[in-house]
Length: 91
Image 1 (tube, helix red, strand yellow):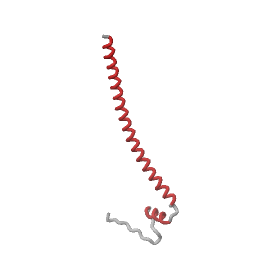
Image 2: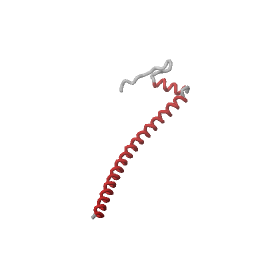
Image 3: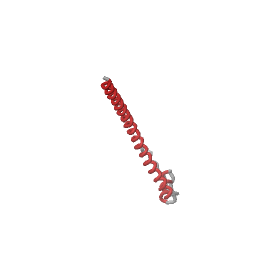
Image 4: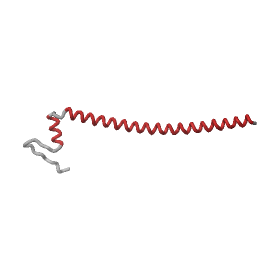
């Protein structure tokens, strides 16, 4: 009888360990998925920041370019001397 009881207890312990391991694995899988989503979001932020950095680098490199200066001035509403600025009020 003692051997049967020991075998039964061993089976219960093994079953409890298997349940614990399965639960732990499921929790880890959820954490991995959450971390992957965070990683993807951060990768998108990095790509966006790199694009902004490239735009700023280009702007710095072309800061003395007359065409760039004229484009920026026109975007701010400036006009050349003797030019007439028309506003479209139909929209």
